[in-house]
Length: 321
Image (cartoon, rainbow, N blue to C red; front, side, top):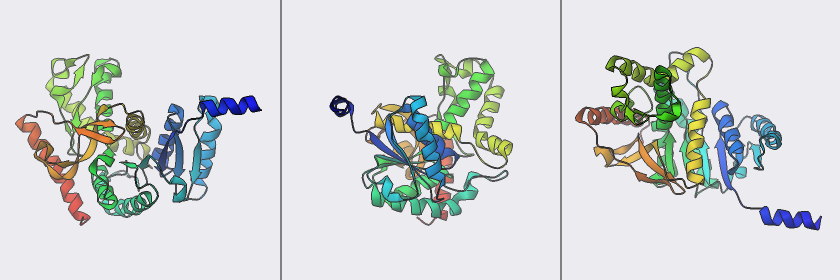
């Protein structure tokens, strides 16, 4: 026994703590992917008693199989999330066929406001990643309620939108998705701005590989990517890809990767835009957003990005922030 205790004391290290608020499809998938990665202990919280506890226990029982020693807890008590390093906010009403993300603003506003207040109470030094739709607006709400600096509150959007665009390009050209790079800016919705001239396959611009008409059709499918899944599912919305995108952000922060990723960030003059959250490339590391990357845009791209920011600003005004 003494030998075992000695071994445990040598290998024991303090892991980061990530709390996932919302044990629905997105939240639970996030939690399990983090557990698989093994880089943080996970608290899965939901107000529906039994749901997070059951899913958390199920995941914990999977850890011997996935070879992970992380701790996983399901709870309905925010005290269990205390001193989290990162909190991922996922709860909210999902879209139904025919609904836009914007239709959810007032309903999900109440949820995100309450969640953010409790998160701040128990984890005043955490980084907040918002996944709830409408993404850009809910991120701005969480920033407003938390009163955290902007580097510690941001949203998952561009990673998902870029992944969808990369998927469609790879399918069209029959190439590996690993060789496809895509750039999508702007709000997470109908006004998103794919920068097609910066999208490449093996370093080759897609404008040299595909005709404009085909590129335009792939852009259109990307913009409507979420709606396509909603229409197929009928009773829910996408969750595997959104969760994978959020976990990529978590990994970048915990492991201090300095990854350049498109995220929904509050702008203070970058791209000539101020006072609103919009999707732009950022450097993600242990301090959250460590740099906002400003790309050189064409006049047409710049106008489209500003139009997208204005659309977000209109919804922010609906919330009277």
